[in-house]
Structure formats: C-alpha cells, structure tokens
Image 1 (cartoon, helix red, strand yellow):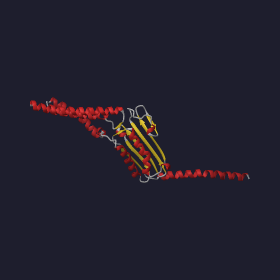
Image 2: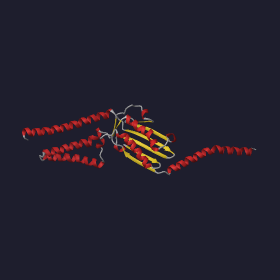
Image 3: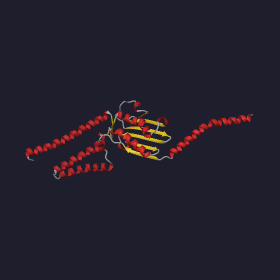
Image 4: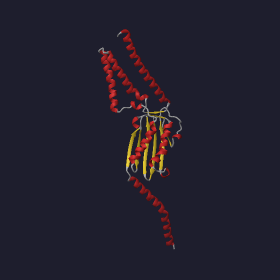
Length: 273
C-alpha cells in the first residue's frame, strides 16, 4: 500500500509538471521559429527640424497606435516596451509617456530626445529607436527587425516617422555640409582672406574688396552658422533668441552690402569716380 501511494504521488506530480513543461516547449519552439526568420537592420538620417511638445506627442502616437496596424498584429498578443528620455545639461529624465515628463517645456540645455520602442510577438521581433539630437550625426532612426518581409515593414515604419516629422523641417541642414565640402569651405575662407591682403598690397583694391567680402561671408558660415542654427532646434527660449539674433545679423549684413553698392554707384554718377 505504501509503494502504491508513492507511485500515485509521482503520477500526480508529473500531471502538475506537464502543463509547465508544455508551455516551456512551446516558448522554445516560438523562439526557434522567430530566430529562423529573416533579419533586417536599417538606419535613416532625420532631417533638420524644429521640435516642440506637440511633435513629440505625434511621434509617440505613431509608435503606440500605428505600428500595430502596419505590422497587422493585435497589441494584446504582443509584449511592448516603450519609453522616452529627454537629455539636458543637468541629466536625463526617462518616462513611459511624454505627458509624464515633469517639465511642460524644454530646458535651454536640452540636447537630445530618445524614443525607444521594442515589440516581441510570436511572428516578429522589433527594436526601434528615434533619436533627435542637436548633433547631426546622432539624429537618426534605427530599426532592427526579424519578420516575414522585414524590408517592406522597415520601409513603412521609416516613411511613417519621417512623414510625421516632415511638417517641422527647416533649412538648418545647409549649415551641416559633408566633411569634404566643409573642409573645402574652411580652406577657401583663409585663401580668400590671404588673396585679399595680397591684392590690397598691390593696389588692386576693387578685386581685393571682393575677396575680402567672400572671406568674411565664408567665415561667418563656417565658424558661426552652426552655433546659431542647431541641426535639431528644440523649442527653448535660448534657441528662439539665437534664431532672432541670426536673422537680425543676416538682414543687417545684406542691408550693408546693398547700401554700400548703391552708395558706390551713386558716387560714380555724381563725382565720376
């Protein structure tokens, strides 16, 4: 009787273990099937743009509401991890939603906003980041996905995010040329200045003035353009002030050139030289 009782206990124990073991086997099988799917990784530069809280909310809405439709899955069947972090000169604040961040505005020292979205499903695995940084090289969208037709899904996700941002694009990318172009402009600044000094010393003042104008214009572009025009412009009081100062300077510079040329023409007509 004791031996029989022991056997019954073992059978009962096995009955309790079987559902757990079956669940474990199913999870292993799903992971193996997922690992066998094609993997696709992509990276896309984010265009220069103006960033405010409304745009961040639109990006968040796309990530949380539109991605599941693009992937054709039910969110209740997937494991989704999402967070948004805002980095400034003091530190980095991480929250589950943009509305959870303590500040209703950007601090003047804000340098980066990072969206991180990870989705696990039996049919696919997705890791997505949207990085909005004052540094052009780090402002990008990165996607790592395992799925059937991952390239098509990646293209849809990229286009969706870029279309969301497109309404806030600006022209500041003009101040961030590729390194070879930047090097050429940098050298041209000094060469133009050196040429102007040489021409002035040889009494070619008109041509010397032209090269001096070119040197000064390139110098403003190369050395000051980025400081007044960040690649990603966060909606801060500091950036508004920089933008206004830059517009004031450019208008003043153009006005100076126009009136200088007009004065020379007027002088020639009146005095003949």
